[in-house]
Amino acid sequence: MSMIEVLALAVVVLTGLYLIALAAVSLFMPTHANRFLLGFADSAFKHYAELFVRLIVGTALVLYAPRMLLPSAFTLFGWVLLVTTACLFLVPWRWHHRFAQQAVPRAARHITLIGLASLALGGLILAAVVRGSAA
Image (cartoon, rainbow, N blue to C red):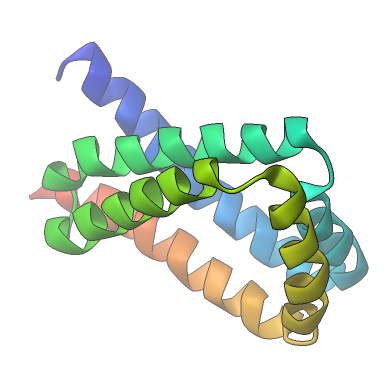
């Protein structure tokens, strides 16, 4: 495996673990999860940091998906992240902030569902890595 593939694998695994951690916080400390989710777009730095992380995760998924279980699904997910991130780069961060101020409180009403979805997606990512490497 090349160094790029090892780095992509590390990012994919960290993404799965991040989603599981987000699930735990959402399910057991929902107030903290709400504050965390609201904080993404409250400054230009955080906005661009989020976009940078999305680029890294999207790229890692596209690069590593062929080695995972369900490669087409994870390739598509990676490309969706990359395309939506490119669109967000065109949006001023203040617009992102205004959108987040409206959308996150609405979504926060369903923080348990967000937690369960994060747990499922994080688990699916990790299982796809393990099953893909076993194949």
